[in-house]
Image (cartoon, rainbow, N blue to C red; front, top):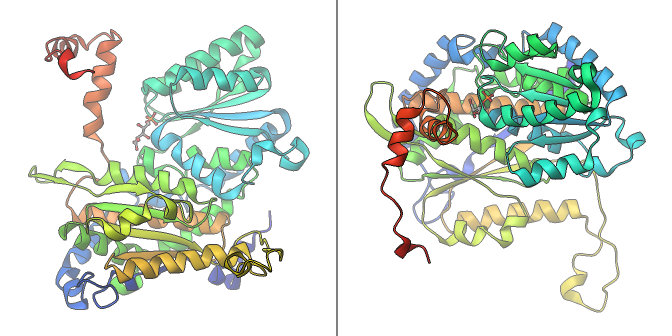
Length: 478
Ligand code: PA5
């Protein structure tokens, strides 16, 4: 690996930039956007949030802040295990859901060939890669149709070891492995879980699986930079030390006290002001197929962290912005009509790439048709960039607030920066809203009802509740 991330000049070139011009009054039409005076009025919320996050960094549920700095040994171990997996496995399958899946998917899509699994083994230099984050039986059987379990390494990722979906996948797979490989089945499973509690660590010890640990203060949706994301990335040949170096750089930038020098803090404050202004939808729109699933990862982070009923003082607040994923330019032909002319309820964040990893020249060949010919001689790179700039312009003309995060290029370093940037923005916004960004009480009821429906011991009360819920009226089922 090149260690280019140690060179100051290269790091400078790879710094992410946040452009929030179009969040400001006077830049967008219809009297939308926020004046500097308005930002000044709210500045104290940023100050309080900053102090709280800085005080808690590395402690409690903010253990993820240490990940760029405290994993030297684990990175070495992960790279060794990944090297062995790359040599022996034809496929590598992540079994996990939510925060245990969305990060690996986003990083895979960002940093690997966009048709990675279709490349030959020689071209890929590593196993095929799949992330199974659902319990759709058709999907499970479809996976089993295309892999040989004997030649596949399964990375079971669950912090709690109590997630029904992941444990179901594990049970199906380990049963098959035992039938095919007997005592050697354990060599095809790597567990990533809590070292202290939960069922997976018990199973790992009992069955003899290789295990990596999710630190205590790292919750699911903040876990991409720990072994949850690092092992799959290393198996894919990604330089995980570079990814962490990008996150470390972003930590430095996001620790700046000055609001106007700290991109995560100003972005969080603008989101907070926008929420107060009724902008309850946050659209994440990368202009890059590589960053497509980053939008999914962001959606979980923003929704699960900030969508809360009660604040830290027990007041009923029902806050949160609904995150929406969108892809440039594809969704210009699907959603942008709504963004431009629908209600004033959205903030749009573009992810822009300065230098794509490929260039495609649009050839000549339509001289007789001027409406097509204007494209000839340009590159697809120019076209995608022009479409982003044009969409931004059109949104501003209609008074739609938006901001852009520029990635100089997509590589492990800038992806590390981006992950950490959004994590910090979420942490700051959570403090401004005075809510706990690290729990998810709203999903517990559904989980418990599932346990009750499947007859889990201890959930009899919930089963009674379900049984006594009003029956559906057939009149309304047509
Ligand atoms: O962010 C979270 O904590 C959740 O989305 C979890 O990642 C998800 O529920 C999976 O949990 P676990 O890793 O315990 O299986």
